Amino acid sequence: MPNFFTDNKDLVFQFENLKLKEVVEIMEDGFEQAKEYNYAPVDHSDAMDNYRKVLEIAGDITGNIIDATGSDVDLEGAHFNNGAVTYAEGTQQALDQLTKAELMGFTLPRKYGGLNCPMTIYTMAIEMVSRADASLMNLFGLQDIAETINKFSNDEQKEEFLPQFASGEATGAMALTEPDAGSDLQAVNLKATQDENGNWRLNGVKRFITNGNGDILLVLARSEEGTKDGRGLSMFVCYGGEAVKVRRIENKLGIHGSPTCELQFNDTPAQLVGKRKFGLIKYVMDLMNGARLGVSAQALGISQAAYEEALSYAKAREQFGKAIYDLPVVANMLIDMRVALESDRSLLYATAQSVDMRDKLEEHAAHLKAQGRDSSDVTRRQKYHSKVAALLTPMCKYTLTENANKIAYDSLQIHGGTGYMREFKVERLARDARITNIYEGTTQLQVVAAIGGVINDILKEHFEEKEQQQYKGNLQQLADQLKEIRELFLDNLKYVQDKNDKNFQDVAAKELVELYSYLFVGYLLLDEAQIEPRKVFIANRYIMSAAAKARKNAETIKNGVFADILHADEILI
Image (cartoon, rainbow, N blue to C red; front, side, top):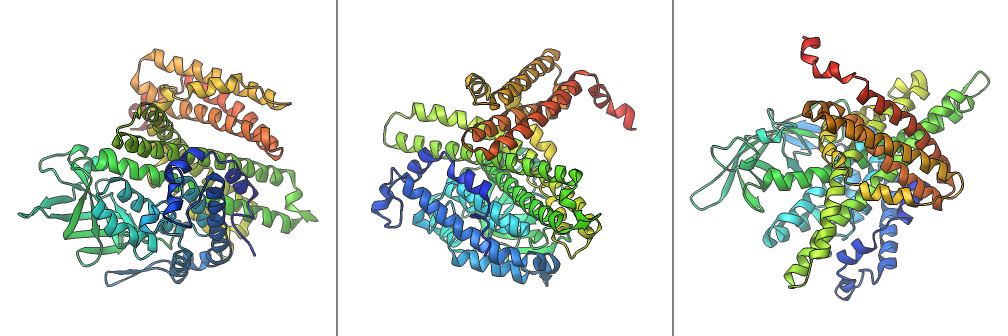
């Protein structure tokens, strides 16, 4: 019986080497919650045992139930009839199983029926769900909506909405984009107005809304009359149903089990979340960063599935009297896929842990302040982790979603002509992968989001500390390669800064972000290779390849090729 947690040695390795002790202690109120809930952990070891059991349950459901119906869900898709949306049969069965297993409130507090798990543990579950059926992740992964309500809503709203999410009674959607407001959410025009009693009503259209048929919607709307930018937008929560009309669902290339809806709000009753005018600049940014982490995990799940399909097919398919697995050109593709897969997993869970540290330190600081205690040290550390998370989140989405497309493409290539046929799972994986580097911010926008942290070299102290570390055996040679990449980065960063040209910085951003990612991931893999011999090969292959790519990045920045981009209007017209 397959289990997508216990069968995945690299995922288990990541779990066993998580550094969540401080996060868990904050979440468990110093393990005082065990006095109120007899199933709450009494110490860190107990908490990790609980998380492992939860992941094993998720691994069993994804490996034995969800994976078996993924192809049928893709063929059936979501249904739309007379304004009503229904899920594919397999999608509904999967949601029912996840609900029965009490896995629909991963990060929510126990008082609302949640599991009180760190975001990192939830992200591992998202990876497994996505490996089984990427479209289901778009429903399971919307637990971020509940987390946003938990962070920013008042107590009455939490009591009303969160138990519905945790129990699986309600699904959700984040209604952000509009026909004329995609990546540029400052252009949102859906109106929020108050009646004479102060009650809010929503009117307008939203488009490309994942699970727009959901029971509870978070809606970005223009609450300030006469405004045209993000400062006039607020966040609202409302129920779907009669006051929210689903006008249609989209006919998509992939992720067919996930309904993508166009919505019409007709004087829909709504409640303000948090403060007016903070909808985009605070709440949506927090929500989208969570969604970007989720899509990164989705991409990794697709990558894992595509790699498994390619490996299995290569071992079974014979040509010229032997399995194509034994052909060096095919073996090399599989090795590159495996290295990308494991390096991506290292980046994902480093990012998730940084997000957990940011969020839980913020909660801890607020708790200390409420008690009248000194929170300055916690606040200082929280600000650092906030900067790191703001860098790693877009870097992670950029890297993992681009790699998912490459791994799925290569898996299909290994299958040859048969991979192009509907009978083989890899065809679906290639289609599903394609959306990951588009939605929740395209790859190009991830570069824009990451470049500020790169220009400011916010990981400077981290890299300097790593450069002083001594690595055993041949790993020191790899560490020396990373030092050379660091020198290339600093030299090119200075080159860009000395030009004092914002346009040039913009076009050089992709190369600089990639250089920075090679360093961060490279050191992650080196540290892993110190404790796990199997990781030595992964670290070696990744770092040697990164060194070659880094030289190309550096040459691209300095060789004048960007002059063409800077004058694109003269060339392309």
